[in-house]
Each structure stands twice: as structure tokens, then as C-alpha cells.
Length: 107
Image (spheres, rainbow, N blue to C red):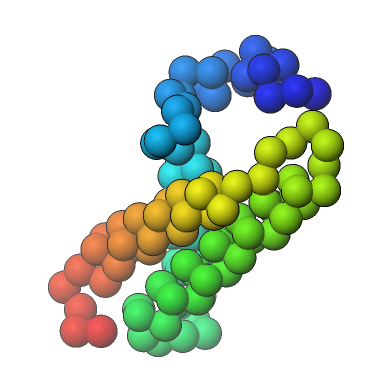
């Protein structure tokens, strides 16, 4: 399916603004995932900063791999700019995690 066909079948996606200068969809996709991963790592890593760094690196890497796959897919366009937006989304997710989960603790 093309992106426009997916937008037509998935209701909320077509309402998310997407321009070349601001990639809100990347933030919507990567912020919740990095939040959840940071939360899932609580038992393995007691320090919030370590969980946050691991989550950011993991999801930025996933975004980079996705762009690499798009490089080899004829109908897709790869962009390092998108990897930057993935990083921003992952960073916002772990910032939200650190603010909400670690609030009031001395980590």
C-alpha cells in the first residue's frame, strides 16, 4: 500500500499534519515507545538516566535502520532528517518518563 492509501484507511493518521520541516508523526510514533521502554527497564537499571539513554539510543537506532531499509526500497524516500525527528521523539518520550515517573525521587 502507498502512504496515501494507508492514510485513507487509518482515520487518525490522515489528520496528523506532516510537512517537510516538522515531522509530528515521528514524534507521535517514537515518544510513547521510548517512554514504555524506559518504564520496562526499571527492574534492570535502577538509575533513571541509564534507562533514558538506553531508550533514546535504541529508538534512534531503530529509526536509522528504518531509513536504511527505505534507501533500498524503490517506492520510499530515505532521509537523515527523519532520523533526527525520531531522536527528538524518543528524547521527548524519555523526558516525559523522567518527569512523571521519577518525580519526587532522588535518582
